[in-house]
Length: 146
Figure 1 (cartoon, rainbow, N blue to C red):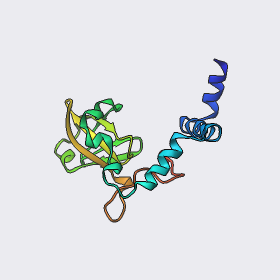
Figure 2: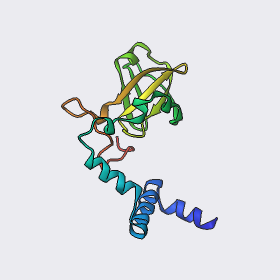
Figure 3: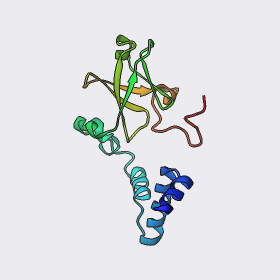
């Protein structure tokens, strides 16, 4: 029990997962994260493989963590330092909504109003100049930096 408290103080959950994956890879020749990364590279050209499972099967979204938020006057919902926007959100200013964030892509969130899906919103901070979105924040960027 004491080692769990020390380990929690030393490592973030991401660091612990990476350390465990490295251990599995060196000891058993298989690390789930490394395998997933290799498969993403190998199957990058296949559209179906690269789609978010929660986008393809909406019922999976109910398994995602729900976060309470409020739309602002500009049609955006702020969560964890990112501002998720969609044209429909502008029609509901200062309205309490529920966010379900994609595990596949940090730039995607589904917005629910009164338990029903309202829209799929995108994080404006992760938008590229060509209109596409990054899956994650760039390495080394902090969600606390403003």
